[in-house]
Image (cartoon, rainbow, N blue to C red):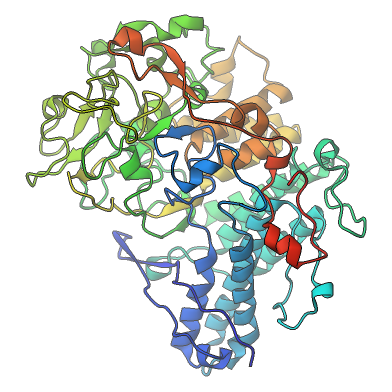
Length: 639
């Protein structure tokens, strides 16, 4: 019997009841010598299936995620951590920093071991066997998709790799379009046998709807400018035998294929009961906070947080840990709140005005330096901040997603302070003013001496645990988190890998490129309406003609807003060939060294290095050790 690698800790989770709790299935198969041992009975086989998920990169890892804190959406105070090498451009083939190349191929191998040995399991019901096979095919497709998204054309693995293959017969990379076709084929085969939904202990495992949704995402990427006839970057990207690895001619048909795939995925998702999240009063069980009080802001804040959420098509059920989104985003306290995930001015400008328009195209919104004029919030803004506090005009009259997901000068941060005598904010005057037993929020003050500033009253200037731009992230932070002065893991909720809003906006994007503009507007409006802003036609009436070029701009901006801090922008700006424009410049924010509100209200460049080498860094580097090991493997251009 062939040997196989030690099986990693399972990444699937078990959700009980109505998903009110989640824990790992701490099922790690014993380190066996043969496949026979690993498939000796039904329990062992089930554990092996779960182990096949263990190679999926953790999207919510605060220190080691490739695409969470690494685009231009946020800048953090944690430039010493592993992920920070990517916005600085400090990665290479010899030092990839975060590389998924080997782990993803290991995951593929694990799946083929399952496929080749599932018949060994005694008395395994035919329906369960078919489901296990379909899950393995889904994961083979997904691991290949992740490889293609990272590296472009990759080595296709269509059977279990042999350990005896001579070095001169190692596989070369397959052309990009062939890789896309294989990913889609495997998702199709998986979808044919998978259930449409999973509940309870099976939540987070593969479904047919997830397979269809991810197939559509693959085809969207394939149709995008980076990969669809990009001879500017890849005219000389060939295998050692001269085979072209990237398509050199633009194909409009690729957009049509993506459009059809999204139509199928949307039908399947809606048919299985998936819908946009619209609850306006939900509170995570055990973490009660009636804030945000505004119903639209409330539903937007909980869009990715509520576990029993029919918008989420597929989720990652690993716990977050103490050093990821929530603790790093919270207003500062010694112990567990690090005050350090800070939206950039570039991201803040992407959020619309209350009229559903870009800030520079809304005739009612201030222009030029007047956006930084200091003003009192006033009673008319009592739902978003302290009426007596001062802020800048840029922060007022914005769309609900801005207020749900961003904390600004004078604005509220909805959060609870623990009531056990160790509450993080029990001495904060603004928290005590605006909070009671069922509600919790504080007023953010980023001016030196303020509660969210780099140097709160009575403290010293911090070298980390501060907001570099004078804003804090609220997205993904549970409002009912009872924050203490000691380190705690934050409240758990499954992290959405793909949700229905992505299907709607992916479909809208494909429709724009196919010149089906009315359908594009229909699906844009589904997301905009849920976000509490006017329809596209209403917003742009009398301002601009909604032709193909304009709708392309709109759908791209809508994506960058809706999927802010959801692992999307790192890839979207690459596939649109816009990464050099946005990732190669330093972040900007407010003057966090300001000792008065007027000093604070100055646009200021954040000193942290930002670099993007075009076209090299549009793709990730293949580890040099693998290129040296495989004489048929070519490196990505520029590395």
